[in-house]
Amino acid sequence: MPGDADIASVAALLADPTRTGMLLALSDGRALPAGDLARHVRVSASTASNHLTKLVEHRLLVVEKQGRHRYFRLADPEIEHMLETLALFAPPAPIHSLRESEAACAIRAARMCYNHLAGELGVALAQALVEKNVLVTMDDGYLMTDDGEHWFRALGVDYTKLKKQGKIFAPHHIDWSERRHHVAGGLGAALARRFFDLDWVRRLPTSRAVRLTDEGQSELKKELGLCL
Image (cartoon, rainbow, N blue to C red; front, side, top):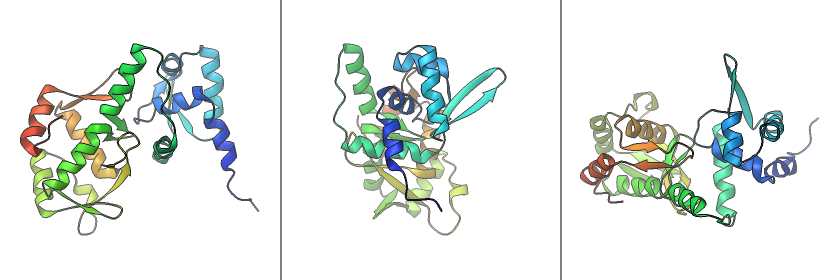
């Protein structure tokens, strides 16, 4: 008969900044090869391989093979949620260079929290959707209003698969950098996908951060009165 959960073993795994850096690099839902992860955390290929092996063995990462190439991704979206929760209690990482300062600012401004928008952009978007009566705040998330269904449909967001019984509900996450909620779950993911399709947001090449395009700024101001 198994005993209680061995939280300490997972905590020990996350105590290494290289492994945590790899998990954070994958926290936007992408799958990346070992070489990209090694460069992201600035270690050799052999060192990266050792860390990745441990993360796979502890079922925090899974490996996807495409031909001769191997890609790593988070084994479960809840792992990203765990990282975000831990970040709420973590002190800010020290900044040693202008490059690190710029990267930190970009992540706080707008980033992907697995498959939905977070950071200043995600929190401001959630607040604007509530103020426009697209969503209504509930204890543990948001409920889409009738006006909201019209707004999402006009924007081209496909939410039909989410509507199984009655109203559409979207969970929220506490944003670690803003200390307020952003829209998560299937609705948050569908909204983020549509923003990418419309070129309102774009990924930054070497980070989980995203940036709002000029068109995105203009359209969000027009649609929601959102100014960022």
